[in-house]
Length: 443
Image (cartoon, rainbow, N blue to C red):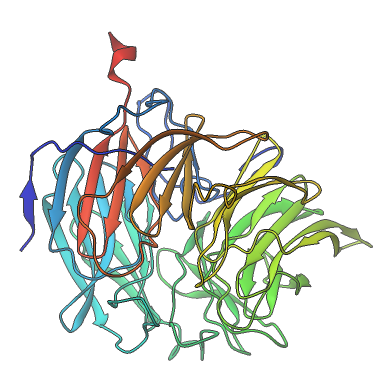
């Protein structure tokens, strides 16, 4: 049973794209005229970690932004929620089941819950504490798409959670994940297609009809074809609309119409867990991972009549992003540098990889996850501390901080979500909703 708390709590803070932007799904998103700024899929409307919403607090008060509401009883989950159409969508383990749920964005009350498969067990790692779902659902109009840890891919009606179609990436496509932690990606909707990554030889990547689940095409990668833990992006580059996936063996780009493998790039990948989503800007893709791999920028250009060339611009070990995400803003890359051993926020020059500043100096911003809105970085440390940062190429600038009032024993890996004047923080069984809108602007 979900328990509601309407009390307002004092609390404090947290914390891509220059040039060309990664093209995301045609989902309900930043609608200036309607005043609605939804977060309908993983890493936001354009899958770049950035909201176009304005009118938010640029600095938090001493005790932090007010808590609008909180809910408990969601079940175990490492994913953040998606917000669209006045509802909040997420995934959880509840007992022996893995489920998708929908809440009312006004107060967090539960609207529906749908079981999709048995909850996969024993896929956690040291320090993770609890197990749970990994996928943030993708909302596309009146449909919701979600991927369970065991590979169950479902299409549900957003209104009531009723199943429209159901596939399994292992049994239907012979898929496999790159390591023991099972499936983690969030599906990409592009036009009439759903793009996902079963992994494996015969169907490394697949495109499905988003309304029926029928296969449109299958794409193969000769080696390093296990599904990684990053989600794909859609881009326009080198004369092709293409899908970029961060697989077991590294980056790979596929033609959107046919699934043809256009290019691949191995630097920036590791054989443990490739988690951080690639970034696209200025006909380049930036990729990064931890476990000693580091990051790299690769330039995409035409190669002959219909080919694509992928050339390294630079490689760096200064930004080893585990899974907290990287933000590109005003020519700078912001992201946590470090793996299971910890780390700190760092700022790099996006074009050269040169270090602008490192929060390790002064130990100001330990390893965490990033989101951006209205000219501020929302940075969530793994211990639950939230910081609000002003992006700067010159120095670390903090505009607020608070400690999350309730914590589980696992590291806080869920990304912060900004939607319609609210900051959403999930921590396994708990969801906190903070009011970060600057109400003085309306006076």
